[in-house]
Image (cartoon, rainbow, N blue to C red; front, side, top):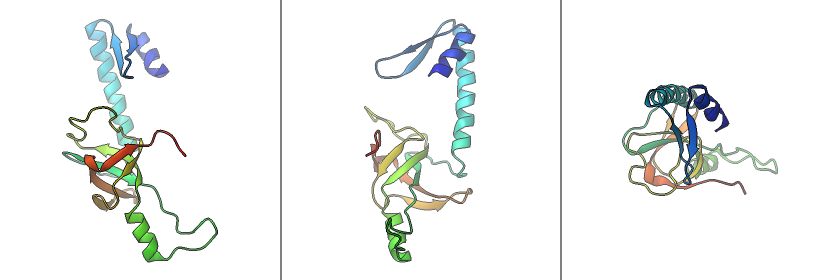
Length: 152
């Protein structure tokens, strides 16, 4: 937020934050347009860097990266491969990596954003391997059940 305020002030704009947490800039229209274009370009560059999978979901689909399931227990016992694979498929905690163009349309209240950790339905969607070698799931936006806001 502070970085945004500094950049806005550089071009003569004022930053306003709504009660809902949305950020707006106020000032001359040409300055707002220039700032918006600059901000969107920076945002797109950050998204490309964040999503190294080579995959972009479409429509109502989302791309999540499930958390890694350990192959060994805390006590040092190795988990059999078949059990490990089953646990990976059932993993319910993931990071939201990318969203399709219509994902979350019509949702009210909290809408998940890329980079947030979320709970997803067990066995949802399809498993795919990204160009970066990591495992991902392509799931429907409705398969995201909750945003993780605090760790236990």
